[in-house]
Image (tube, rainbow, N blue to C red; front, top):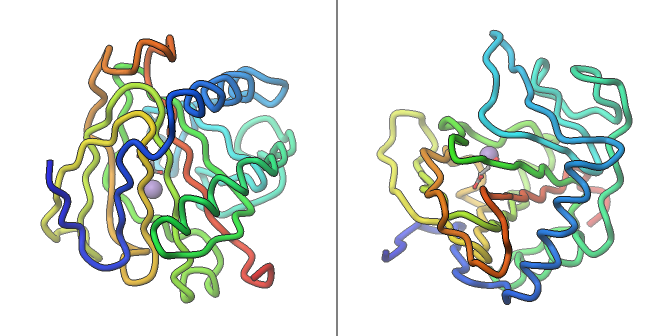
Length: 212
Ligand code: SIN
Ligand code: MN
């Protein structure tokens, strides 16, 4: 599929080797079933999300749509720290896309065969971070996702792209607030070496601009 994504949006197909994917999948598994486990957020209005979510570095509260240090919408546990290797990975992908990031948080989502995410903007990071166009850096692992990438208004046309295991996707600058979502997961499409049913997606962001 040919990507014509416009300025500030870069798809990096198969960026990660299968060895790196496998190591990351192991880390993701340990995190989502660790002492501060992933959970299914219930968002404002009462809907359950169709992913299991774990935030690292800062917690995104699905009731307030704000970031906080402890999970006030769930179990009041502190968000686990963002591993330094994740910060380095985000930087590597951003650089490959011609951008910079010093990530201070990651939202790790697990999608099962019924996983999906409605069209939305990522706009809950700090005002200076959004104003600077600091990118969202996404890494996909496991089953392929049908990813929608739209415009700055919800009603703008959307393009569908497949995000496969090992792909990076970076959107910053003029693309930072573009609508996006996941319509569906293609079951059993993950590389066999990963022995993973479903999909992990990591999105790195930099909330705090003073770190630049
Ligand atoms: C997100 O928009 O937060 C997740 C995108 C994805 O799963 O690819
Ligand atoms: Mn998003």
